[in-house]
Length: 488
Length: 100
Image 1 (spheres, each protein chain N blue to C red):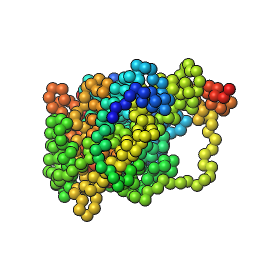
Image 2: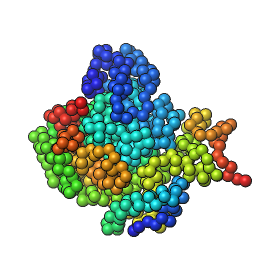
Image 3: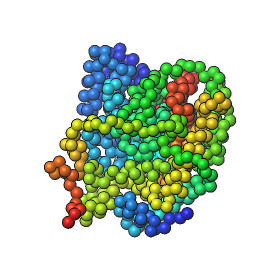
Image 4: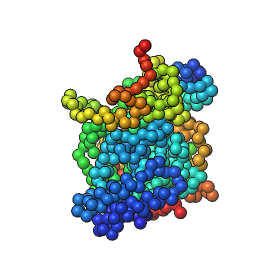
């Protein structure tokens, strides 16, 4: 039962072959037996109460395709009933007085919340090792990181502890852990998913999205979690769409842009081989490969690591030990209370990013760093538009690796922020441009160490082309079985 | 460009983060590593390029943030909102004395 897709589970629920309560119990039992540290808060009573409501809806026929489906939320989405920590000591005992819009949307659809998922502190990290509550283990190889920052989300899907999970992506935080754990995840166009109640890291980049086993499931989840929200100032007002509408379209004639900058030095040979094999599979499905160039790819690292910390330093100033969060026990005066509470509540990486952000925004440096980064950000977005739009556009979608390597060992990069940042090279540019991007499993690494560590294929599309991305991914998943593989 | 220890102390103060002497030293090394990476941006010619602060503005040039009507939309949730606060009294947040 735990290996079934959302689509399959929904059919069983609607046909009364299984109840929402039975399904929730099955996954809660699996979570209890797991040693991955993927979950930060589980409350069986709360979950079963939601399951009872779902079962009532199933009995009366008041259902959606997600009624009774178990789901787990990244601990960046605030929830009224479960604790919300953002992976930080700062919010260790925090319970939100309201639900995030995304959580409300899933509750309204009738999903059953299994609990809250571990992540890098305030979503800052690529290995899930920056969580105050300890790293998550990669279910494929427990010596390895699951990726980050949505590491708990990806690990939970891979280990079949949940059929659906939410994640957030600021610079790759859905796509990269999805790749490293061998699951499917999509970051939609910036502004598609409400940021209300999603604890802010870098507001011009943060975007929620789903992780699941298949592209089809991600489409069903996106249908529930997108839509205009007046409580999010950058929410995009667009008519509701069905993201699963074109899953079955043929890929005949599809032009796939292959950016040469994604295949240069630094890309591990085993990852390249798996990605090239996936591209060859797409050729068999009728697509053609087009050599394209995204010349500013490498610059996306410094640009991102200026803009994201700048926005973070501003967003995280709200944690002052007054209205919520950690407050130091001893202090001299108000200023001392702020300084000590923040020093004790934030972890090292979060502090570093706050400091970098404060520096690039400070007098005398703003133009050289922050403004220059925003200008290059426009050049990066223009590179994508040259490839993807206009009458002379080169391609319909872009494909390449998600991460330059398979999952690395826990502890390998813990003390080296720059090494972590460099590994984000293939995901940052999409986030900076605000484009939709997804990751689907396409193979494994090689050699004794990497043979059990998954490789992800990245698919990037133009603004609002999520349905196309899901179609492309779905067709690949009809022809291959990488997405069905699960760790033993 | 390299940061000095005094820069780290200055931005820590701006950020309201207490750093011990030892932590400031370690932070300095890490920040200089990060800024070595950031230096790559300097070589890029961006003359005539407008900064991009909202990614969708790359697609929709006349994008503007919405304004809402100037009316009361929220009801009173003070009790619920003060629930997670470290210290409150009579509906007020408690902080150390700031005015003598």
